[in-house]
Length: 325
Image 1 (cartoon, one colour):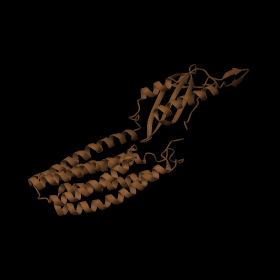
Image 2 (cartoon, helix red, strand yellow; image 1 turned 90 degrees about the vertical axis):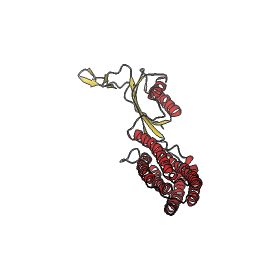
Image 3 (cartoon, rainbow, N blue to C red; image 1 turned 60 degrees about the vertical axis):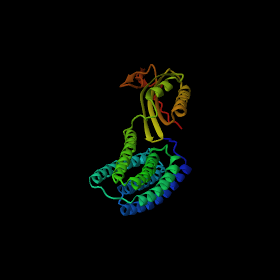
Image 4 (cartoon, rainbow, N blue to C red; image 1 turned 90 degrees about the horizontal axis):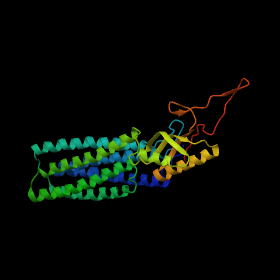
């Protein structure tokens, strides 16, 4: 099996950024919770809770990036490419739970208003905007990976929600309306829930081995059938090993040809898949048009009996498997 993984340099840079982000986030969680209690601000305490989930998300992603660098083994033949997908799935679920908690607390505070200290609330939130914005900017470069994208959305959501806390603090300072604080909390919860749902849907699709959302099965089949010598494509399956690594298996029916011609045909098919769809790992079974089929698969011909002895004829349409490099 050959899979084109990220370079070692990219993984090292990713781990360095995640370490830096972990330290900053932990310090901010402590500060936000402490000053949230002092300011009696549910919105600020909600931000502390949100940042706790961010810390866990960053930690999970760090572990996942490390696991993804480990090579495939006889026990784990695809390696640990889905470690990042699992991390993103867990991160998104924890965010959804957190959003529910924030919403319940906000509704309770509507019934029992609490006076907040808007100036302190705004100062702490301003520090949060700078920190979360810096981390989100660092992670954006690697956001093509669903694992990193889940953390990137965490941090981007934090940046926006913390900016909303600043505006809310200003609104309370000017109007003295305490309901602004729980209303902000509800908006933050809704934003968390929305971003989390998208990650859960994407990771579940990968874990259930659905066709990658960026690909259309009909387009891939059409491209394969356009290769000279290919008569038909069936039993076509495409799935994701990780967020950016796709695999394909298929039966390809061809005209009668010799072994060298079939190898050249497979190379042309793999060229189409690799260059046009980014599919680097393929397993393709070649079948000739006059080969008898059983349950949709080409079966070897019956042995010919000559002078009481069985003779097997191995034509060019035998089962040929191709692993793309």
